[in-house]
Length: 167
Image (cartoon, rainbow, N blue to C red; front, side):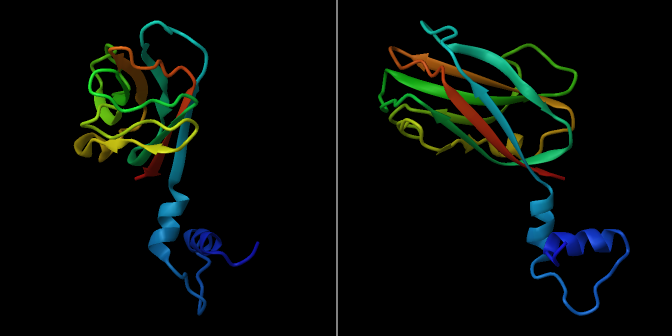
């Protein structure tokens, strides 16, 4: 194995310390070692006439800090004041709870007073809710929900990625 920052940190964890080379950026190397990506994709035309109901996405097993949430959709949606779409990501404690009662982690809204339109097959960075994004407890359940107002488009084929840092 070459002398990468990751190898140097692993060697130090095992007690094999370096003498001269050192680590170029220890903070960044540690963050990179603890970064995880949580991906969820939804396809099909479930609830195509109305909305995609809130559904479980999965479980985050370790205490984590949410750094960013991204999504992509195969549908383009213009921003509008009455016909718009919303995308939400929520977290629940491991003990669960009723859908709609989770803590909001991130959101996107195509209303003209909110984020912006959705470009088909492009990466969109969702807005993090500061208090909720600070940490996600171990074994938290994540859910997502897509809603439309007026005659907004139904987003049935899309993917969400959470960029997490284990803490």
